[in-house]
Image (cartoon, rainbow, N blue to C red; front, side):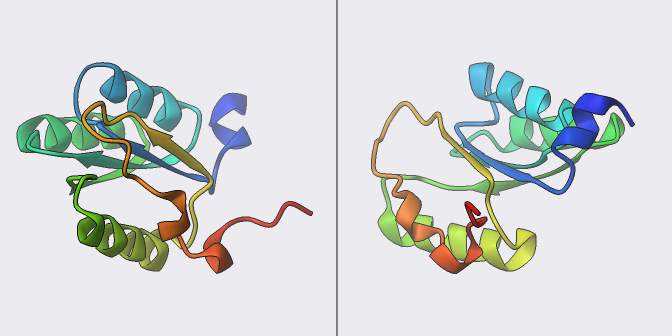
Length: 116
C-alpha cells in the first residue's frame, strides 16, 4: 500500500454529486489516497455503480447511495445509514450544485472524530 493510501486508511469521505464530472474525479482521488468513499448521487445510477466498481478494482473501498440533498428527510436517513455502516465521517465534500441544503449537523456529533 502506498504511503499516500496509508495516510488516510480508516478514514471516510462522503461526496455529494460524486458520480459524475468533478465529483467523480474527487471520489477517485480520495480513494487513491486511502479514504473509504461514500458516493452520493442523484439520478446517476449507472455512473455511480461504475465508479464504485472502478474504485474497488483498484483496491479501494467505496459504495454509492442515491440522495437528493434538497429533501431534508432523505439527508437525515442517508447520514444515519452512513453513521451506522461507516461509523464516522472524516471528510464531507458538498459538491452538489443544485442545492445548499446539506447540513453537516445531520451527522451525529458522537460519530465525528475528536479534535484532541
